[in-house]
Image (cartoon, rainbow, N blue to C red; front, side, top):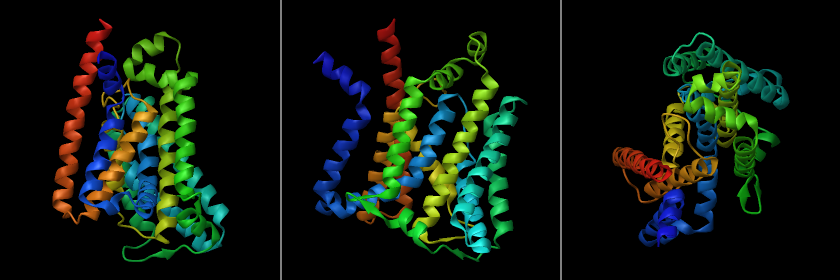
Length: 318
């Protein structure tokens, strides 16, 4: 019984997500249909990319509020380059370069000037939002047509969307990096104590800049996949909704918002939890107002549960 209690504490998000699936299935048998499960896997990809980038930022003891609107901006960069040149490859390269540069500036301001990441990335959010409207006037659209966009937005393999398989592969790579490389250990060390990390010989500034560059790159990928799925780009898209869902996913998955603790597998299950919840509430025709209330209540409950579990682990360690 004690072993089960420990197993539940370490993997509570898995049990809760599976239980939630069962509840939604009993309410609406359509929920567990193959088509609906496939739809969920497609819907969570942009959120998952935001969540993965945010995971490393939060574990390091920081936050990146620019990721959501950044994904909209990077999607618009792709659309403009594609519209002008007709070249998809050139557009993707532009997204990668532009997103890495955006993340580099964020990381530089946080690492070198010691500015709070909250303030720096909040400014980045507004800059991304403003640039989106400057590049393409509000109300205008650029349509994305061709084999690449069909592949990214709608192609399936073994019943799964190609974009979802890309997300799973990226999470698997992140798992290896986080758990089996020095860089992953450095991220955790910085999140626990920057001063101790410096004393241990870690180049804290370089790691921080790398973290924000990876975060922005994930945001760029999210923009590419989201725009490919829609088939067009335009300013005014709700990038902040992606950001909030991404943050919710990692918090529900057990990442400590103060930094220093979290797991990639927990973040992935938190993402599934958010995807299942969003899909089921839409399937049950829950109004948007109550949808947000329910999601906010879940996040508060997750924060409370994670704090209690963290306290119990601390007590066991002593």
